[in-house]
Image (cartoon, rainbow, N blue to C red):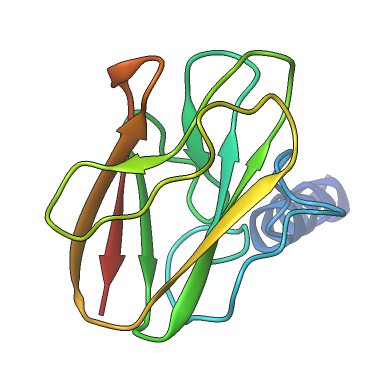
Length: 133
């Protein structure tokens, strides 16, 4: 019985440390950056198959919150077939093409601060934040 408990604990620790996230894999890169917390790559956001942005780093969504270091790049990658976009909602301006259903869009953030964004199609129902440290 002791061996079975040890094996179950070892599997749980390996699963927790593996950093597996269904949003990671080929095409889900993003720039460098440091960060703590979740398991996915820092600076990667999935534009989901539904009405959602999902941070690949910590799994947060609506708002997806991604923390990076200054000089790092965030890459949004589209999945599914719905039309979405990425646009800033603050004073720093960035925006992907009008709408997309596939592909990716990247922005390099050189200045520390908090940057809010949403989807031009879905507005505040689909939003996110990039925190640059």
